[in-house]
Image (cartoon, rainbow, N blue to C red):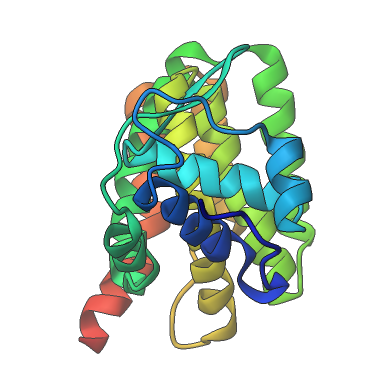
Length: 225
């Protein structure tokens, strides 16, 4: 019987996934089994709970695990997920921004239909944080949080959860754009236009505004290929 062991801190999420896959491959966790909880896994692997949570989220999105709220996390498949996850990690900047375009346009359209006053207040606060960010890492975090805020305002739980899974890759890409002066940033005005359209409950304007944020960067990336 294999055992769970502390993992290196430098690659915590990937190492947690590797150890989880080891449990599946060894037959210690079978399809239908409930796996240990976050606290237990974090303690046994000597990593943070967010690292465990991110690993579980990644495995649940590709169908290996199933999170049942109020009950626990269960094994759905014993198929090795690591080749797929590595392809996600190796995705190009163009791949990332094309996917963001798909997420953002639909999220903005839905948010314009469904947003609450609280959603609008939160979006404006997130926009202020984005406008104030200067450091590339801080900017990437603030911008990704703003786009996630739009996904949350869509009130589509699956879209918002999918965006959360994608967010870490997006955050890295947004930081890279801020560092690379050859790649254009749509700037504050374009982002304010999305929120204004959401506030006005205009789905078409919100979708077009969201697309205008991504298009300059995509065009520049296409020109570099």
